[in-house]
Length: 322
Image (tube, rainbow, N blue to C red):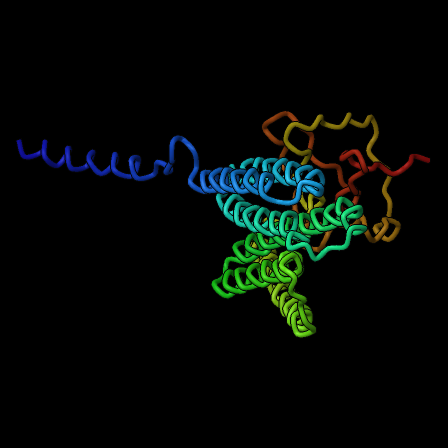
């Protein structure tokens, strides 16, 4: 009677993490993706209203590029969903970048020249102007998003609190640079001209971002170097030629037995690069190793007990017979 409550208490917490580990869903959709879909629906409603309210003569180019932006938004969001199978970070960064893209491009497409300040000849070049704005904005923002994700991963793989913090700072600065390089399209659409200090701040942000990204990369390679040294100290990076004196590798066919023993060659005639290290050389008085139990032959040696070098095929390189 006293053991049953303890068994129940041991089984009860096991179901709690399973219930808490279930991902959250909104109508069967991930919350970040649900926000992107709702934003796309809102922008579509606003676009339909602007079609009936704005100038009808310049609507063709605006509608075409609106559809292009919608298709790009959908494709990029699908790409973020594929990348988010192992980590949710790409989806969060991608949705944030896509939301910003949608807002800036819709303002640049529908508010550019909406106040009637454009000349009649400028409407003829509206399609080409919007092409440059859409293409440049998508490339800059998505490149900044990809770079931010890469910096965050480098900071995490640095396995140090300093590397993680600097990686997050570098990713944030890179996102700020992407915003500063494209926000002026939306500002110009309202008729405001960005001044010289705007571009000075943009260049300063680029320099600081480059510094933070460089430190993140250096911390990552520092971690790689430390891991290599620790693995080498544990003997995990021993060269395969060092194991040749113990016989053939597992699964390798044994070399054919020679009818005659190899000719004695002085150790000086063996190339230096093929000579095993001193730690692997056997003492002249030490007896030869016993044959392995698997039926494989021991590694052949010279007359003085020095092991033969290994050939390119993994077999002993016997000296040519005269």
